[in-house]
Image (cartoon, rainbow, N blue to C red; front, side):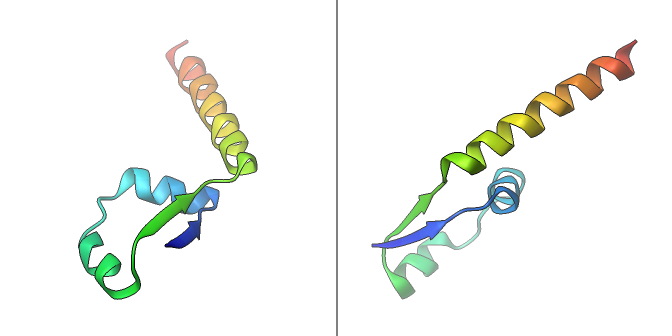
Length: 60
């Protein structure tokens, strides 16, 4: 199994774009496991909170 360590930008890209031909990748290099470090999760939570604050300010 190949582990892919994801940074914040990669996770955001995966969330916003559809992954095409993932089966082809697995055929070429084997099974894939995406690993997201706790630091990345914390950063994504901070980004989410900041975006919510911005939306609330725009609504005022």
